Length: 288
Length: 243
Image 1 (spheres, rainbow over the protein chains, first blue to last red):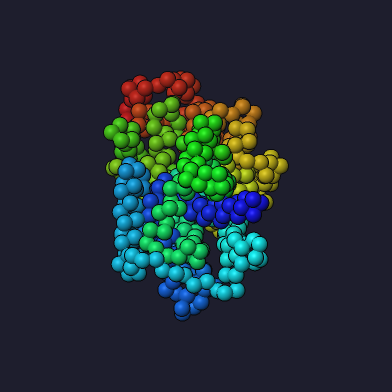
Image 2 (cartoon, chains in turn green, purple):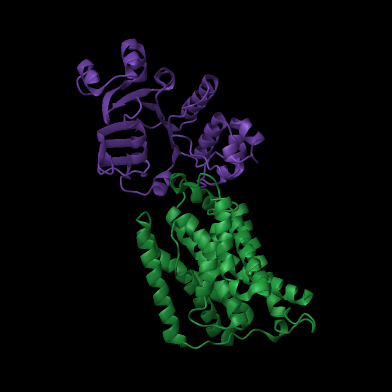
């Protein structure tokens, strides 16, 4: 029983880590650009596929960095050429645009790499179970958790200690004033978008190593990531972090007792949190 | 060269026509004040200068460059320090972080130097913006604009909501900035105090400039100062055919 509980807890942590990576990127983009990026899950898949292409040439470790970077560059271009045109317009435009992008990227992946799943080769050094008893503790899963911790810590340090991070945090509440202080807010938004997409690409590589690649691989992460943002509170990245871990672990623990409710429990948590705290766990006051 | 030159500005919010051909000039090295009651269009004029609410007609020239259609960050980068109405400090950032947001233009102003000017800010540097009093927020907003190392400083109602003693402080510092060689455009409702420190004054009403002249001259005109609070455009025009 202990093994079962630990197994599911750890599973929850892993899935929560994926929710966190995806949701943090979504959240950054939502906070500064007011765009709900429905193509986020597809950028995630793209990150995984790029790693698939790159690994034979440059190996796994460089690909772990280079594919998210390339995905981010693509995100930057997409923001500059398309997303920025709909800033300040009715939200319906951004929904339509990112929905369209989602289909284009997904079908693009299908066209290039086929509809069937593809394996992403991970180095043998991190693929072995660490012990017989705790068979679920493979090196790779620990590695995923480690990378997510590093990525999240780096993101928070960037936002907290660099001038650019401060400008992003300031811009979340008052972009006009940031602009009036001489900061190129167009570039700031593009770069912020690219950072969000970088996190998606990273999640894609990590997820690919665990469950393999397929064109829809991001879809299952997208909706829970929205839930993580709402549960955590809009505008608060720490909230998003907590929200992602909370629903990941809750879903996994539910699996022990009543497996078929493991997805439903995510939405139950959202409903309960919203009833008790309409702004979410750590939602900033006066955001609007 | 003039620091700011506005000519025939027409600005709208949606369909409402707010500015009806506003023209004014801020000469370099001087303190120019724009007076007027609530709703006269003072803030809209400043927002049009800063590119935040671009004018539909007319031109804005800053240090000789036509900036009418520029985004605000390009305008600010020319050396325009903006202290917006309501201060608009970043409530979720600490005082020190607020001071690190502006573009780092080269010049004499640095964080230690603004702390020298506003020791209170140094004491509170780790506090969040939202924890500051109104006066401290005003100081922070001015300090933030100074860190851009501006050649011209635009202040939109810095005295709003402040205790009289703090207002004195703020005006003293604004006057000091002019003495530092920074051109200043001061938008105010506090007529008497603004005229005390200003070189030149404009009065705006209903989106039109209804008076322009040396500040000292307007300061002597007690009748006009008293009527300023409640003056309408017609009353002004009766006293003085279009400036």
